[in-house]
Length: 487
Image 1 (cartoon, rainbow, N blue to C red):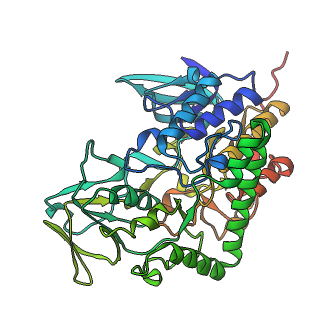
Image 2: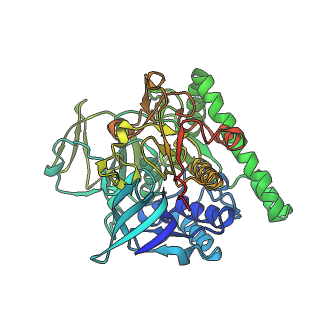
Image 3: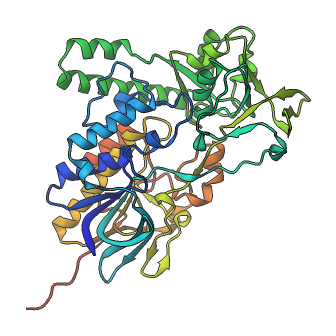
């Protein structure tokens, strides 16, 4: 039976980052990556819907130790996938990956002070043991999208395409297409499909904020052209992180001004026929949900086409040849794209068992956004949902390494977060309090936070990096030090 100091679950961007941090900061430790699929890249090698791209700048979304030197900072999936695969190959991380190994169960034994992981690979079961587990598997379920009730959808005679399971060789040229949704996926798909569709209608129940950003940033282009990469990258990286942080803070502290600014910028990009007050005036304040980005205004430009429109309404019923809305309008369709969200889950859907007892994620608290109360020696690596994901994931990984180093220093074999005073743990809220439909639907499956350290959840990159220097790894943490054997 194989045993490792660390087992990383997932070979996406967080898993590759975790492997590099272990390799460089804990060179004496053994590790492996268990990947359920047969390829590196996570999200970027899984989805294949039209126009798939990042909705963050790759300078900050990319790996902190691997400069993103392409001119385009808002990049398509193929570039991101190649970047991740090259990073894994160049660092020798790819040799540590066990592909087609899906983790089906995880059990912790306090007596043995280790995890036992059950995996399946090609129909064969395999058991692996680990001292510490890093769950770097994102926050959505690969084999199941968010279940959304669309009345009459089974009566539709055309093609229903879900972005998570995009039909191979789907041809929409000259067809009537309706894209349901207003999130990042819909805003990515619309401009791409509008290029050749006969008619494309984006039907949204409620609007989102959308911001146009340049795919090639002039500042980054200048730095990359005239400075050596070892100097250009850190300068531009900090510039992106600080700019992003200040923009988020502005919107959080001055939400009314933020709303006006975002709507004004959208109005500048859109044709006069599109009513911004109807279609780009969300019910929520900026950053209560993720801000949708579109490179070079491609989403807004789509509505300058004669074949593209946006409708804000709810569905009365899907019929054989289209959709009837509550207002009584019928939108004809050959293809309906259901960009309605993801099924949120943590720990890759695992239901961990601790000393024979099932562990409930929804009843736990998130310790500094990286571990869960009552779950020993396991990191729940999670990124930011309002800004660049990787900044948060990397902060989590570095924090977990700090915990492991402290364990080693004091001779401990396990670390488990605990709530020392339950009276201070109420009231609590889900670790992600966004008003997005898919996060609201998952609130009972998410760990809790109190708003007070160390159970305050993820804050932002500057705070989390500050806490890596000055935060405590003992507050709210219980370490187990084995009794010394008598000679």
